[in-house]
Length: 143
Length: 81
Image 1 (cartoon, rainbow over the protein chains, first blue to last red):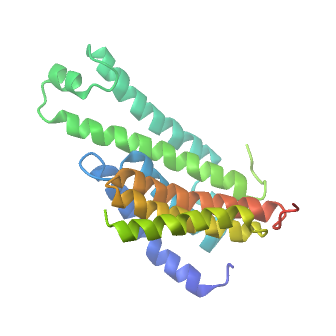
Image 2 (cartoon, chains in turn brown, orange):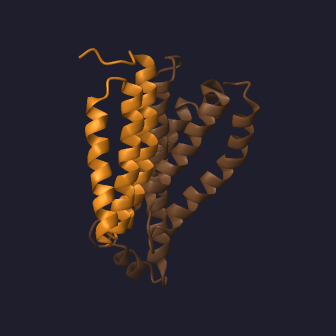
């Protein structure tokens, strides 16, 4: 598979567009179809395409297990941090209006929604890539 | 909601579901399951459930197929029963 120039060229062209589309889905999720979960899955699909085209070792060199772990932690921490920030500002969990009222910045809830969606997307992407590593890999560097 | 299109899609979906559990080759079953998921996506979108359609398209037709194919590559391809 590694020497197939058609697959490699098409993947090299398609992967940036897939990732841009994933970011669009994540950011656009507040006002239309899509959201953090779908965008994260689409982002993970671009990594699956890279694994198919360039091999598992090449992709593992870009994101290793430590990077996957940190991305999961950052995603969950963003989501939970904003949620508990709302609790701290005397609101319910993920009640953006409480943070907006406490800080006094207008239209802050849109930015907070985007941040939460980005956190969900990062966590979902890292988890999906981790599952693919564990199932499709041949067992090396499994920690 | 177009009556004839709905009927054709549901019929084809049921055919795909039956074929996926009766076919012997597991790789064929995985591809038929992806086709089932694609028809389900069109049905969800037709019922104005765009978010569910999006999730079905990405997870059902994308990730699940790759995971099944990776699992088949680790085990035997044909079922014994």
